[in-house]
Image (cartoon, rainbow, N blue to C red; front, side, top):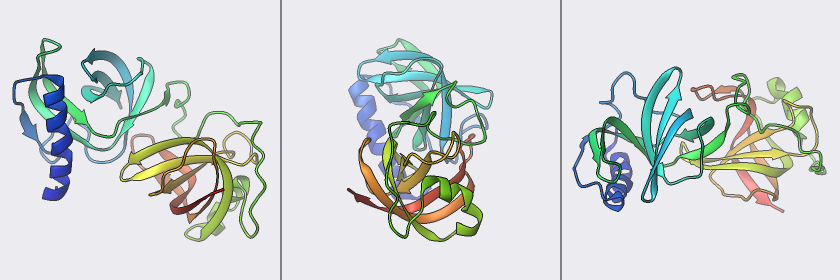
Length: 240
């Protein structure tokens, strides 16, 4: 791991430890030293099995591919049965939490955790989209662009081409793997082809209408069950 990146991960961890009031200094392990049971670099979408709140942080027991482990995140409203997505983390060995009065043999301090859905919403491993088509969305297609449904239908011929699409933002996950994950709908398509993922360095708010211009990528597998039939990558965003 590059020293600069390691430092970026280390700073929020130090702040987190001070804020929690956990006095014992844990042994710091970088991501190349973690055990075989600990997630490696990349996007992880994990099921919450248990939750312990302490001060401004939540300790979550999570499961991924049959393996259970603990993570520490900024305090969030989340319940067992829901999912958390993250990509930036650091493992701590034999970490003693004074506020909880227990020692974790291993725990991941996560810097970018986001709530990603429920077990029911994410039970399909084939395509990760926003569950359900919003019947109220009816966005006029942009001239010389494509609709969401057309991008799905023509994904093979459009692959690696830069296209434009207009849609309403229905979900945003920010700062995952260094980019923002934006879901849009325009009223076209059936369940499964109605929701399009757009990745971008630009931030947008749910409910806004945008024009996204990005490269079409099909059958993208980020790992951990995060598979997309089609998406727009590294997109430029125009908020209307």
